[in-house]
Amino acid sequence: MNRDKTLRARQKLVDELRITGELLRGSLLERTVRHPSGCPKCARGEGHRVFVLTVSYPGGGTRQLSVRRERVGEVRQQLRNYQDLKQTIEAICELNHDLLRPDRARAKAGRKPHD
Image 1 (cartoon, rainbow, N blue to C red):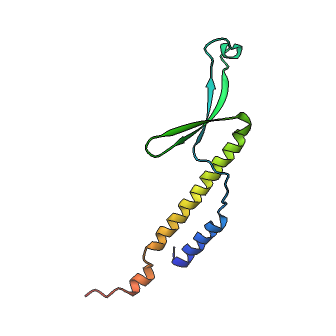
Image 2 (cartoon, helix red, strand yellow; image 1 turned 60 degrees about the vertical axis):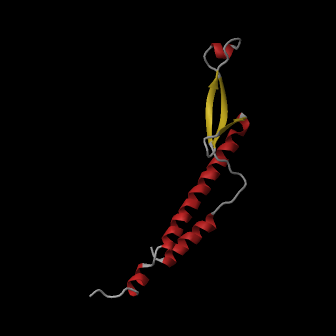
Image 3 (cartoon, one colour; image 1 turned 135 degrees about the horizontal axis):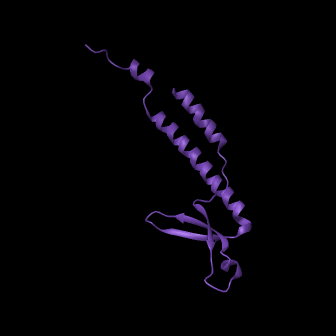
């Protein structure tokens, strides 16, 4: 890809960036909790569905947050927003890596002929 084309591709990605505060990093897990005794629903083997947002941190730390059922859709959207933003940023970085490479046409023009 030539430099101008790379710059246009990068600008297109920058223009498409959807920056929002509605971002979450992590994974949404669905678990079934069963009480040891006294719960008819658990006695039937059904259990109770719960949702947990799990976030890992550098150094091995993990945090788990309970998510109310009515907020699961919102959390899923915020996780998608984060992933979309992350993918776009990664694509921009790859284009910037290409821009660091010398342009082949200019590099060839500046070479000395071999004897």
